[in-house]
Image (cartoon, rainbow, N blue to C red; front, side, top):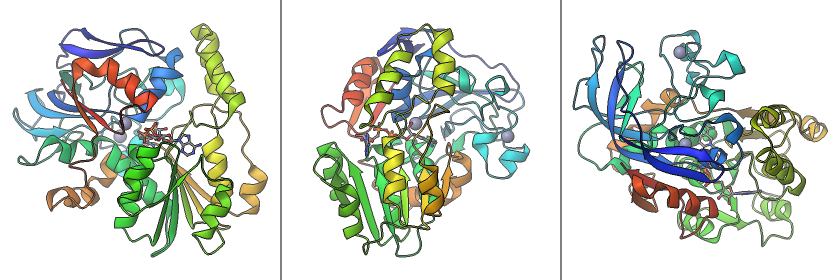
Length: 393
Ligand SMILES: NC(=O)c1ccc[n+]([C@@H]2O[C@H](COP(=O)([O-])OP(=O)(O)OC[C@H]3O[C@@H](n4cnc5c(N)ncnc54)[C@H](O)[C@@H]3O)[C@@H](O)[C@H]2O)c1
Ligand SMILES: [Zn+2]
Ligand SMILES: [Zn+2]
């Protein structure tokens, strides 16, 4: 089959690789019809190379049609339409039972002390072949794939794999009081969708912050107070003036470890991509090479006693946070990979009864998978208005 493979820093290629096969009795093989490109893929493209091998298949936002089922699968059958969550969760362990699918105890990667395995996401998360491919092997075939109805186009459902549950969790963890205020840092797919969900769920004031003009404009069109980081002399002042002088009740960080605005850490990150992997890995994991600009801004902006919700992915360990300020401001902080299956029942009604979140025209680009290498470059450089790219294998 054809699949998008990682080869090195900023080097991905569509190659012919072996077709996946049923390995366990409850596996299913899905023929992928649509598969997303995510901000998380950009971390692999740029800074997390030490945890990948050339040839690894990327992608964790796929949907498609069940092609083959293992002998123990009873719920799904060939021909069913399904979306595949990005975290690989068994559905039956203690963590899955508590709605913490991103911590699944059956698929945790104990070797690296990390949570549930993820599709297409480095050795830290199990080095499982990903879904930017023609076919995908999916374990836990009776509980992991999300069945979706026939009818609407793939765009309606594909974001159930990641964008929708991630944004939903970001908003849930932000604990915005009814009619209250939230500032969302980063207006990529995750931040944009977080703004939409926050407004849909009753936030009174939604502020979005980014530095890419068309991303700001896109949020503005949906009623968000969009602030351009580059044009605000004093962002805190600008945000406070929209929130009774106090700052928002809640702040969502939808930026993550490659935030613009921290030069020293950018240099450290750059270094890790030049070092041999054996040296780069511990540096990446333990020496705090995250660029924390967005997280620091979030801590600064939120009102005293407010809540921070972090959905942006961070990767280092040692870079100290402004703990004095966090303690002094009495903040509540929640974070983590999205527990995809936990939120599906909340989200599905918003996809089957009209399209209140505007997912049908959320994607800016629909491309054949063969054009994925160009699309990665375009999305990273934020060229051509690219916000969300969907591939057809
Ligand atoms: N928690 C999860 O389960 C989960 C799931 C998916 C994605 N993510 C993470 O969410 C983050 C966003 O993903 P995305 O797909 O929207 O990616 P993206 O890269 O398109 O979005 C990031 C946005 O942040 C903006 N930005 C950069 N520095 C900023 C700063 N200092 N202040 C404000 N904005 C800034 C960029 O211009 C960009 O628009 C990534 O870190 C991704 O890994 C987490
Ligand atoms: Zn994703
Ligand atoms: Zn589990």
